[in-house]
Length: 174
Ligand SMILES: Nc1ncnc2c1ncn2[C@@H]1O[C@H](COP(=O)(O)OP(=O)(O)OP(=O)(O)O)[C@@H](O)[C@H]1O
Ligand SMILES: O=C(O)C1=C[C@@H](O)[C@@H](O)[C@H](O)C1
Ligand SMILES: [Mg+2]
Image (cartoon, rainbow, N blue to C red; front, side, top):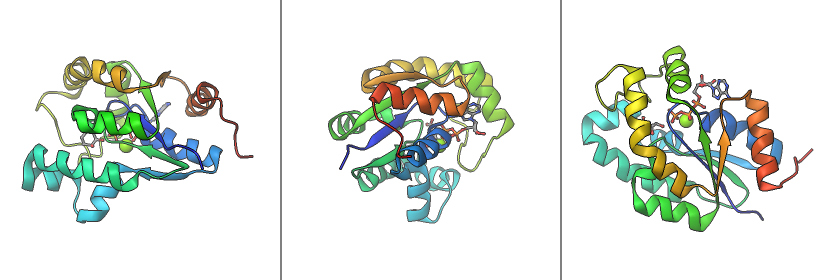
């Protein structure tokens, strides 16, 4: 059995989209911590934050990370997973960690095109382009220090998947 692969990065970098495609290419299972915690609580991210605040959400996110960790699994994490030292250490120790890197303008354009506000309630109360620049400036160092590898996520999804496979030196399942 192979180590789990964790995808990290900001909202809109493609952790869910690329993660699923990567799992298909590898014949691995796929998990997404945002989906897992929404299933466990039967609430959206926005509902959880409204009821428990971001601190409550972050605690649940850590539980989801640990619950979905399994061999031969691609794990799409939430954009803020790297904020907690426990999560950063856990991912590095239990698998290979890939940072899907993209410019804040590209990320903001993707989120504007597909806001999914229930899953992505505002983090700062500011317009999305400003929020993305601010959040990335605070988190980029955390993504970089947590990742074993950094991949350019501003390519076609298929190219991003191929870049991850090449970086990890793993072959497609078929
Ligand atoms: N490489 C790509 N090229 C173009 N569009 C992309 C790419 N990757 C993802 N997208 C699009 O960007 C949007 C956000 O992607 P996705 O939900 O996978 O991001 P995420 O990193 O999981 O975000 P979150 O942290 O909010 O869960 C989707 O509409 C998706 O189709
Ligand atoms: O960047 C963030 O802090 C977040 C990203 C999403 O994946 C969700 O986990 C949630 O909306 C928080
Ligand atoms: Mg996602």
